[in-house]
Length: 289
Length: 106
Image 1 (cartoon, each protein chain N blue to C red):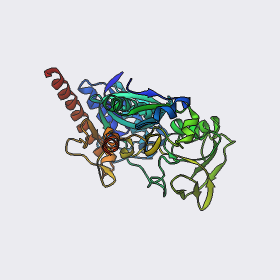
Image 2: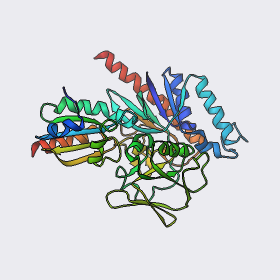
Image 3: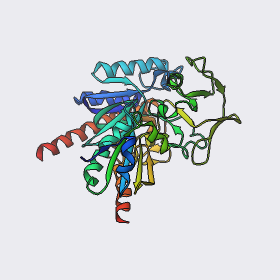
Image 4: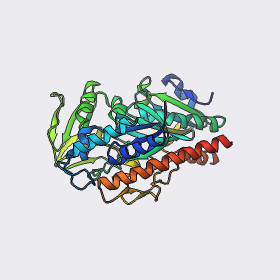
């Protein structure tokens, strides 16, 4: 089915946008990252959100999520890999599946940590963000998984299962990694190679390989949506939380400082309303034509 | 037919003359499915002048290896069977159109 609004990100901004979209009678799909990766869920105590003091982050996130689903938003877990304009709306690639939307609200949060040296230069030349997409191309070959997300061990197990020779690199010991996969603990990681990947450097140790799967909880908005305009590290938006792409709105941490729940909820509310108005205007335009 | 599905056996003959644009894709790849309508549109726009083809890397691993495809979707541009450009990952339709316009005006 085609949803009126697809929200990318299930944090405070995304859920607030979803509630507002539902209030305006729009069908809403919220695509969430693995809850184990949600930054809010990791907060031990939140004391600066009006009227809801002394909650743990995961309690708050639970209440926000129940509110959104209670008013009819559909929440789905999955790694969003790309967004593409199509026939007056958008297609959203989630793992190996596709969802369709009339409008998009980006609420991806911010990526903690910079890209690795060599990552951007070698993207598509051995560096991949999608194990399910590109794994088959590396069957029988050496690959490194740089695991930054909670589901990265599962993805590494998948690559191992289809016949890739996997080494898992991460700052901390992974949970659920197939014991046949060697694990290298490293704080500092870099990708090297001329024109194509030749290996990964993990704390100075060279691990030769042909493919590197870098698995973070979310992709950066500019990697999701080609042509999206940024302002520094953040998505550029106006007072309507509209981006430079018609029909794409953004809210919360991905639009800039301060990285706070109240700001995210407020921006999500605006984005939800404006996305609904955008859809109504589209429909009116169509009716006239 | 605007977009041609190419097999390893048919590839060389199909791309031997003129400009070709070939999309390497697979069923398990979400982003490839996002690009599919774009390739269809390009097929409608340019299908008279060039060959617009698709290669399923699952069915044709040899072709994927021959072109050193390391990430999908990958779109390879050929002139008389020789690669002159490629685009890896999702891009706006204008990027593909630009490359095609340039190559057709040369």
